[in-house]
Image (cartoon, rainbow, N blue to C red; front, top):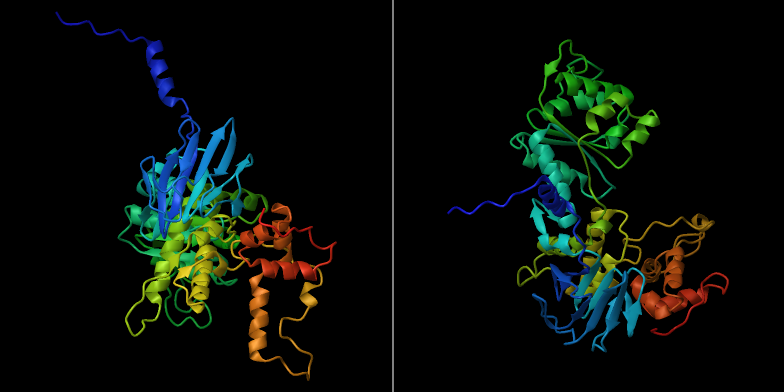
Length: 484
């Protein structure tokens, strides 16, 4: 006898579908992003709202950190509040750059450091199980990988893409990914920064010119559009183009032909356009700086490149890759090439705690400078103290009257300049402290604790005491000089 199949009703089908579509409950926990001297991306979910960290193995994640105690720290998440506790560890625990004594409850902690291991505290660690991948020269954490998936879909199905994002986030890398992932990968990739084109030259540079079209034109000149034939044209800061040039660009996109300057007949063209900007295109249209018809042609599909601050899991990998590049170009000694400088956990912690308004571009430049500082100090390990105090910090407005003050080492006419060694010492002291506004804000954040403030700024407490000594009581926040 054949068993009767169970009857499935419409209500049953809808119930199963709604179960699949129901939002997944977030899994709070930690993401191990750095341990000993290597970048990592390992997920440590809390179990029953709690996780104990120590040397050995936590869950399925090995923690071979000799600077960690067997029972080092405990993390809890209950009723929407985080609690982090140091378990009398040998080398201590720091939370958001400040030493942790006992337990700290509440707030929104971000960065936890135990021994030589650094963790990012996350309300949901599940997306980070995808780990870190690479696409060409781009490091992709889970956050950026979702953007790359959208670029992949756009590249395979369309001939245009608009990229938004802050300066330094990697918009050109995204444009190159569009080129590499699409059917025009065998064609050229032509990148143009529209903001850098001098006034009056955009039409000639973009669309080309015929011999005799203008004074000094002795031969035909190919434009960027023609150079991108069969490939991809990347126009960065597209909204900076003159309105007249925008009209000609729109014509080229819609008619698939271009009329070079001085030509009587258009030339057929075939290219995909990737445009980018860090500005709001709709606002540019409203301000009369971008043609409305061009907006509708280039604004969709669009992807946004997230800020570096939104993808902290990538920072240790970018630091590691930059230090390897520094090692690769370092001059060879008598014994051949030396190993690349290694990152210290304090450097990774400091980088994770900073805002990086210049995003990846700024981070890489500052890590290269920190590596040079470490080299001058004859250190094979780059630490937080080698990083400039102003690196990755938000820009502060200049204080009134600051511009009138002479630069370090400046002298009155006719007076003798200080020796070179003294000038170098002054320069080092001036560069060793961040702007006063940054120091004041750090003092307030650390409730006036000098030791914690100095650690957060990456400077020695003696330097901070000297700075406080130069300020009047009304100028600087009240300070205390204990470890707290």
